[in-house]
Image (cartoon, rainbow, N blue to C red; front, side):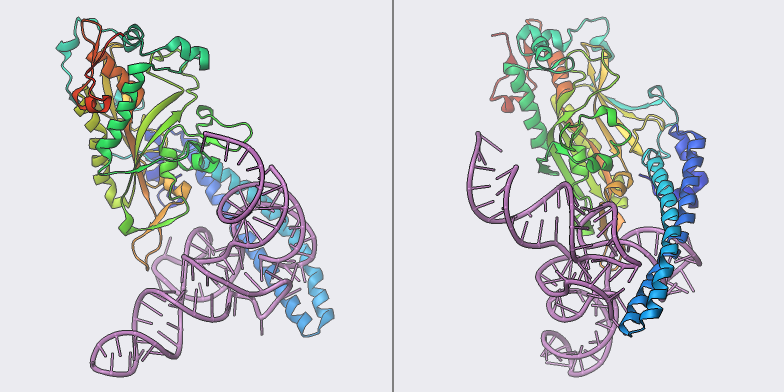
Length: 428
RNA sequence: GGAGAGGUGGCCGAGCGGUUUAAGGCGCACGCUUGGAAAGCGUGUGUAGGCUUAACCCCUACCGAGGGUUCGAAUCCCUCCCUCUCCGCCA
């Protein structure tokens, strides 16, 4: 959530930046008005409360002095005030609720360093690593689902039988390769990041905290009988770990990583680039989250990008780094770099990590703060996150790139220790 | 799931309808004292919002959360959440 004072003290600038993020002008005006309306009400309501408090205090004092009649007289004058207050409070509640709902649905301000533009076509390729066009041009590569089915390590039919479309079932060495990937990602990041194993179901306010609710309600799974949501990413529990707390600056930055399952309804994306392991309702991921002070953000962002790139480099996969344009930067973030691995089987770039800066947008919602010293006021933490390794798509890339003419799949060297020394996957 | 106990400031802990403006203590900060320190004494010590916007003062809300009763609620009533103890169930 944005600081509402931005709409009062820095309105033109805020408007300019929100427009870059495709927010309609009248929506911005509406928010400003709601904030002003609320401010007007709060003074009136507070004044009435003060008056009632004062009279009640008088009643108590008069009773103790034995001045019963005077006390009764004041007592009778209060209900009228309370009626007025009740009406005002009712209106105030409406105005305040409207303000809140509007604010919760406004995206974060994009950083001015984001390229201009409103669609993914305007995203800028910052660099391409390990990719030679000539390696792929004019050649035909098998998609991972074919290779996987031939080797008996990937079974989409049974996954569909059990759970429906966009679920995966890995078998034998396929499952083992997946497990190796997770172990590998956790191992190489363990020096810098503290490993967390969080709950996978969270309260609604935690989903609110990362900006997932209320805007993206249709994309998350919720339980019918309990007021809990299945996390769409480890970002949700990690970013909210210190909700309601005030950390000391000496504890910063907090660098967390978590291996979690991620649950996504993927509403509206059925049928589109969903074959094989490209898009799943349930997938496994190692997530990296940083909580820090504002001046640490720049450095942490660079570290995060390099942490997210490292596994791709080590696995020898070709990938590129995108700088998302202002209009394509996600709801809660100010700046985003995407890592996309090249999938020769689908002849496309698959997003495997989205590294974002969220400023205090998420932490204001979750009320996660820090203090510079005993004398300083608490300030909101700043948060960042990115995938350390999104298992299914990396799995797909490894299978496609490691595919050998004899039908086997070569395991990248760095994964071999995590595969118990196994160097390739063959049909049994 | 059943029975019971409890949730009060950074921490401990009193208050169970009205000078509570939340006692007292610990911790912390500053000052006095001292050759220096400890002890002692004194002062201060939350968050958010409003007003001012340089600060103070003042006002409002906050005693797990949300409702209710009352002129007045930390205190009484209802619902929910969490923690602890015992029982039951269970990987």
